[in-house]
Image (cartoon, rainbow, N blue to C red; front, side, top):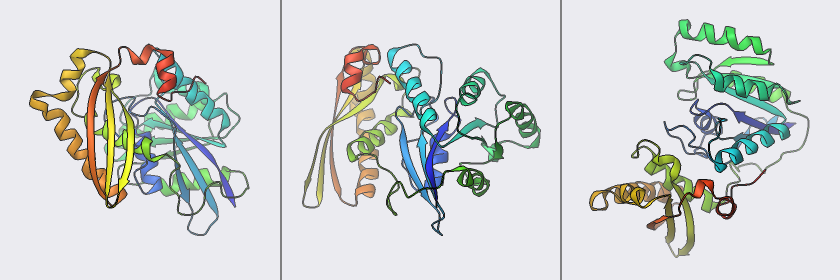
Length: 294
C-alpha cells in the first residue's frame, strides 16, 4: 500500500486546518478566521476504503515573518515538517492575489525533495475570473500538480487525494485503522477551549492567549477539567474575563458542550485566567508550554 506523511503548508488563514478536518472527516484541528490560529503540528489520518493508501496529514501553522520568539519557533517547526514529509500540500487562497507570503512558502517548498501538490482553496467563493490568474501565476512555480478545491464544501477533494496518494512511498500503515489523530487528550481540550475565545476577541489579543490544561480526572460519568487561560498583560485578563464574567462564561460553556460531545460524558470545566507576562518572547516559558526550539 501507499503510506506517508503529507505536510499541509501555506501562509496564514488560507484554510489549511479546515482542509485537514474535511479530508479526515472529523475535527482534529481548530479553525478560526483569525490568522495564525494553528500553533502546533497536528496530525490527521486518512485511510482509503480499499486499503490502498494511508495519508497522514500534518497541519502546520501559517508561515510568516516572525516578530517574536514564538514566531521563529513556529517557522522552524514548519521547515522541519516540510523536510521530513513524503509529499507537500501547498495551500493558497483562490479569493486573494498571490502575495509575498505565498511566494515565501513556494520558495521554501521548492527547496524540499518531496513532490509538491498545490491546493487552490476556497473555490466556493471564487469564480473563474479569480481562479484563472491564480492558477496561471502558481503554474510558474512548476510544482507537480495544481488542484482547485473547497475545504468548506468538499469540492475537488477527491481529485486532491488522487494527486497525493500515488506520490506516497510504498510502505505499511503508520497508524492503526480507525485512528484519526495522535493528539493527546490534553492538547485537544486546550485547543477547543482556545477556539471558543478566538472569534470573541479583537485586535492582537488572540495571539496573546494560550490554554494550559492543569488536571484531567474521570469520575464515573463526569470528566473534571481544570485549565488556565494565559494572557500576557493584566489589561488582557479583564478582556478575557469580560463584563461580569460574560466572555469567560460564554466561551467556557461552548467549550464544555463540545467536549461533552467529543468524550461522550458530562464535563465539569473550571477555567482560570492568569497572566504570564510576555510569554511569547520568553524561551524558557515557551519550552514549558511545549513549543519546540527546532
